[in-house]
Length: 350
Image (spheres, one colour):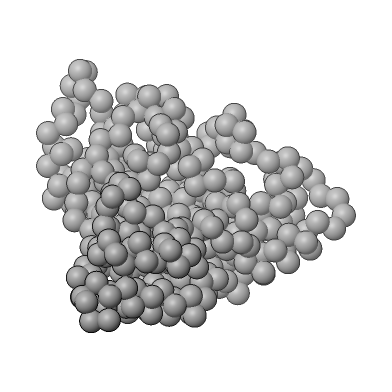
């Protein structure tokens, strides 16, 4: 009954089996094994175009290293105020870019919007030596608010990037949840919309520890291998990282896992939204729910053993609930039932 995060889960059985399989015998190190080499072809098939793929162990490393090849030390990266690269990565993007600056823009439902980006970039002082220079835009798919950019929204942002000669980065820690929600091909929401680099997440959706930096623009990938090595993310036993990613995309496991997580979030949101004094903060597109609950309901749920985060401080009435690939439907139903019980108690009807 832990709804704190999709990071609290174990490993998807299919991925665990793949790790056991690859554990047999010897294999060449540092990505020279056959499994790692297969990833290039497998991801090219998945995205319907030639790609350059680099496995890394964490989402923070994926984002920071991707941005390091996109932005010079005097560059600016435009992102949403709540973006993971801004709030939750301890300055890693700034460190690995050698000092590039994150310029944040607020936006409804956790999203950047083309008109806000256009205005900010136009007023940034392009070519003025006293100012950092706009170089990249980073969007999060699905967003930190649990919402999903539509294809048209990504295209509009990409058009801003092209207008000002910027690169477009996508933080896809929950990319699977976004694709499952949209029901489109992964190509349709990335390179066909103008995305240059995608950080393709797996850890939150069933992997043990595996992410992939996927370059659709090969020019940006030229120095990435050296930066990955320098940062300590070129694993000697890379086969164990690659085996996770291969099992993750084989037989559409990534989409099956994400679809289940999304379904559980939708069920949870629907059940809670029927209760009095309950307010959903954002549309529930993926597997995160932000909801305002009465204090007595929050206290009751915690006392019953449900785990989740208060999202705006320890006294906040806004909580975040996250579902995952292995969330049990009975756990969702139990939370709804308990919330209903305490909601009725608050109203004085029992």
